[in-house]
Image (cartoon, rainbow, N blue to C red; front, side, top):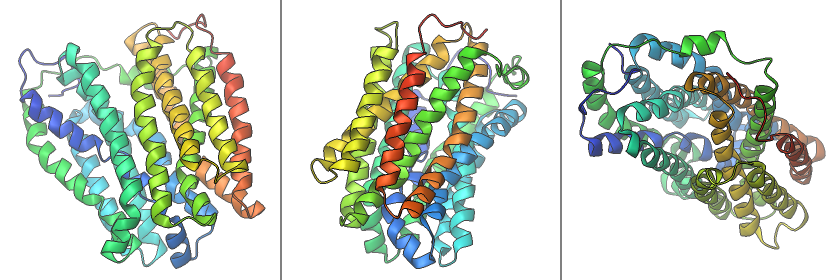
Length: 404
């Protein structure tokens, strides 16, 4: 039995209870990553880590998201999606808990990797399951709530990581506490997942195997969109990793820098919710993507040239630009495909490659910071990268040949 087919004629779980469980899971999908940057200075000092190694700490879950998405699809094809999702949430909880023993370096990185594998599995399979289990007229609303909860969890983690470290007595305890929401999500999900698995209809022919065999590597539109997603993701995870540490180095307290990162995340929520609605109203999505790139560039140049002039504005511009860019990129994964199967192939290529490449962003930019002995080189480099992103966006014309 597998739940990867069309939904049953009548719901096997009360929609309200199912929604609660889905949101409890989605709240965990970015908190593990976002909880680290505000604590970067203390972690680096206690463990003697360079900026490159600290960048790798943020990059590791992103790399897992790129590498473990295909195995997650294969596991779902064999077992149904509910069982791998349960295992993934358990890995998030276990990985977060392992970070409590971070007096040495290896538990910190091992725990982060375990949690990253869990993020890859849940983040890959949960959106598709949402589309299958909720009525079509509710799927969009539920997906929007899913995205808002995911980014809300990231914003909360950014804002309270430092206060939690103070209250609990160590940064390692602050990082480990994010295993608790995962356990709550798992407790809500397990009884529901059993019912879904038991009552789901037999699996239909799965298009994921076809997606693995026929990724559009040589398709020019697919390559162009993949380049855009990789640049956007590099920008996002580099900003997430280094915005708070840059202001700590500039003299801000850890707590205040965490609030700044929360603004960055909160404005992504707003832009990520609004941009798809706007994308439905315009045929040429460059009308949205170019202003988003401009917002990113202004935010990065603000942090570089005048960090104290309007730091909250710079963070908001970064968040708006990144949130809109990613959300419209997801829209393009559908609009540049002629069918659901073609969209699956395009998404597998675009998101998989972009996550793997973006995983190097925080580490590379950390090495740039160490080499230049200044965060100015980081923000200057990212601002130059936005020009490349804008050049790619300029080629994303609405009449490009779609993936079939």
